Every structure is written in structure tokens, then in C-alpha cells.
Length: 162
Length: 162
DNA sequence: ATTCTTGCAAAGCCTTTGCAACTGC
DNA sequence: GCAGTTGCAAAGGCTTTGCAAGAAT
Image 1 (tube, protein in one colour):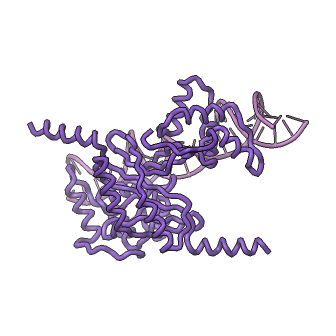
Image 2 (cartoon, protein in one colour):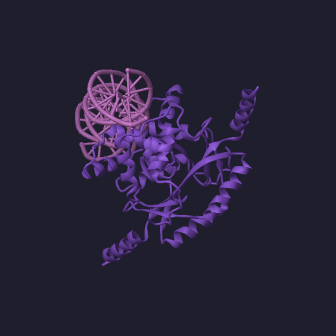
């Protein structure tokens, strides 16, 4: 993990069960959902639906594409996962047990660097107060090239000059 | 316009022609492209591909869907338009002749409020320096409900209580 | 004349959905 | 047993693309 975890009182699994039980029409906790929650929270990665499907299949789980999509939506709604829109792609990351943060996304290698910034909160508050805007969420993504890819580029440029 | 325009030396049209001419393989300036540039810069709206197609057809222009998509990509590349990813939808807005800004997006009425904040630039610089990240762009979108929709909600809540 | 652009329709990509079989509770 | 869930395959949005006809330089 790139950032320190946040102390939480329940496991993601029990938090999800609580969510399901508290719905207007109580929802069921199935084998597929359990496998998904456990698998997703057994590692700390950004992932998209397709990657999750592939990796879970490789890991020997039996979950259909439709169920992956349906359950991801529930996990987001339950506050376990956060949706991350990157260009035209949708990624997911842990929300429960993980602090608020933003992303630097390297366009060369695809790596996502997480960062926290306390001033951002101040800006958000100021701007929203000024516009009497009631905020419920935000997206802050910085695109560019990471340190490693930058080095690679500079090296390549030097080589090109020879 | 919600923000003051930036002084620019050329018209969007000539800036675009310059871009086309400067390509490795010079590209052509067509009637459809001219109509699109003129139409888009004759008003200051956020729009998506579909809206543009509909509105241009209504305005009596003849441009195919494929050409709209192909030309929008060129306009973004030329620095005339900025792409705005909102959830799963892609919007476009003026870039050339318009200052850097961020958005508050009302999830109730869909309205986009533009704002500027100088501290944001500082944060970006600090964070990128710290991570030796070379930034090329960013997305900052705040979701919530605007002042007007907030009032409507409060009113509705009051009425519900009667 | 050459080469790029257009328009059409087909294909792609990702995501959602209808429906019968299935399974938590 | 009832109501919600699954898996499949089909359908949906939105965007891209192959290709023949057309237009810019």
C-alpha cells in the first residue's frame, strides 16, 4: 500500500453484509459476492472489471461477467469501493479502510501514484461555500509521466542525440 | 460566459488552419471542419458529440457523425477544445481563448459551474515536485448539488413534512 | 493528379438487461 | 417457498473504422 490504512472496526465482508441487510428490500449475500469481496480486499490494487474477471478466473473462482458488474456496483454503493474514471476507462480501488487521496497517473506506464494533500480540502470548502454548492464527491487526477518514465525518456533522448 | 475570456491573437479558425498545416503530413481544411469550428466557437457551452450533431443539424449544417468525432479529436489535439470526462460521458469545452478552470457539476440539474483557484496550481506544483512527476494535464471535478437545486430540495423537504 | 476527408454502415468496446434456472433466507 | 441472484446471450450506448466516392491542394 502506498498510504497508511485507516483503522476500521469491521472486515469489508461484514461491512458489506451489514449494507445488504440494511437495504429497503434486504438483499442476499451469495457465494459469488463473498468470493469477490474477499478476493478484492486480499490485495491493494487499482483494477477494472475485465482485470478482475481475468484474475478471479485464474485464481479458480467461478463468477460471471454480469455478476462482476452487478456486485461492483453494490460494493461502490456500500462504500467499500471507490470508482475511478480515467479517460474512458473505469477503475476501482479500496475505499473502506483506506484514506481519502488523489492520483497521479503516468501516461507512459499506466502506474497510479496516490497522494494526500490537506490544502485541497480547504480549497474544496472555500469554493463550495462561495458557490453555495453542496458537494458529495470529487475527482482529482493529474496526468503526466512518473519519475521512472521521465528518466527513461531523458536517457532515450540522449541516446537519440548520438 | 462565466469566466473572463483570455486575449488571443488569432481566431479559432486560423489557429486550427495553422495546426493542420503544421502536421508532419499536412492535413486539409474542409467545409465540414470549418462549419464545426465556427459553430462551436459561436457559443460558449459544454457539449457532447451527440448534442453537437443534433444542434448542427438543426442549424442546417450537413456533417456526419463520423466526421464530428474525427474533427473533435483534431480540435482537442490542436488545443482548441478541452475534453471533459464526466462519469461515463465525454464533454467538450473551449480551451483556446478561455482560461484554465475547474468544474462544479450539479448532479441534480446537470449544470456545470466553472471556477478558478490559484492555490490549486501551488498544490499541483508541490505534489509533482515531491514525486518527480512531470504533469501534462489534470482533471478536477467536484460533484454535488448547486445552490438552486439545494433550495429546491430544502423546499421539497419542508413540504414533505406538512 | 494525388492524397486526404467524408459518409455510410459495420464493427468494437464496455456495460447493462431479459429471462429461465438457481439459491439464500 | 418466496424473492433476490446468477449466468447466458442478446441488446445498448458511444465511438471507431474500412471502404468507395468526393474534395482540397
